[in-house]
Length: 373
Image (cartoon, rainbow, N blue to C red; front, side, top):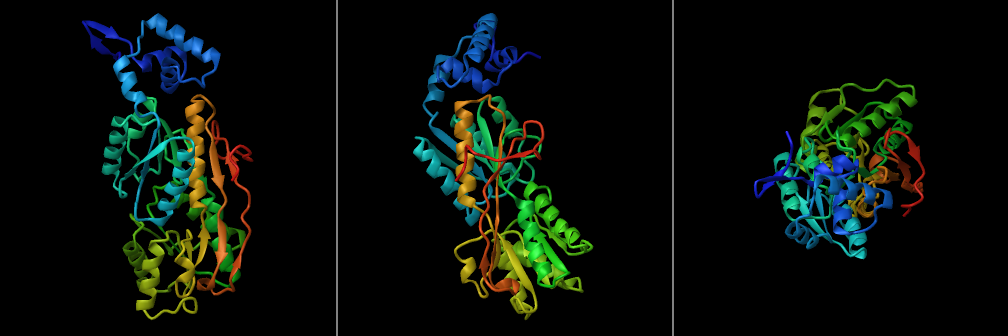
């Protein structure tokens, strides 16, 4: 069925039809028709020829409405109370403001239904592009956003079924380093506590957890993993209680949320377990308060501000060149050793960031030179 609007009794061709005939994205058609620039001459000719063949004419009213908000970027994120996302937002805002863009925030509170509403709201605001961290059940509205010619860049979480630019961290390597460290300290029964298993970050971190055991020639524990639907302190309480109540408790924990780890530590204290004497613990994600906890918390630190800044740069690149190959920037994590794991404090140097070009295969890596910190 042809997609078109009806004007004065005739079918009017759409941007999507022009894009299909020209073999380009709807974003490219929009840029050519608005005269925004940044499109190769060959693509301009293809779009113009397709528009002429179809009899396409831009809607001046719609164009004016869109141009009113082209300096606004939307950002869809899961939890406004999570300090990790607060830092991601800060990094993105700094880059976008320097480029003359404003940032419109949309918190969906880990609710997939609310995520859909927020995306629809941003579309109605005619944002130039959207940075987003998808929920455990990503909204189908993301595909509608792309079809409407709005650029998308994912931050932190890799969305299933969406071929978009990505700024994230080496979750698997970070978890592997944490577990390797605990194994070196003599631990063999190490618990793993994370959020929804449907999230890419969860799957990657558990892969690192398992890899560390295999690398050490040890069997991967099958009874010490607990997944939660949310990243709240209460979820950490529930997860740790489940492990403790099951008997044959672990001697160490990797809790991959700076919120959940607080709940986990609270339960351990309530049970009379001393950290790290009775239970070593490592968190995933550093915060200013982590070093002030009792004992100070060992963490796998993520460069949260740089994740946001990198995502913003990718989005600005996409707006300038809508048809460039998709890119994935993977920033390294850092293991910061403090007292909660039972070792002396130490800080490992941060390695350089890595880039994956995932046009054909997300696993193919290459060094990033354009977006260095």
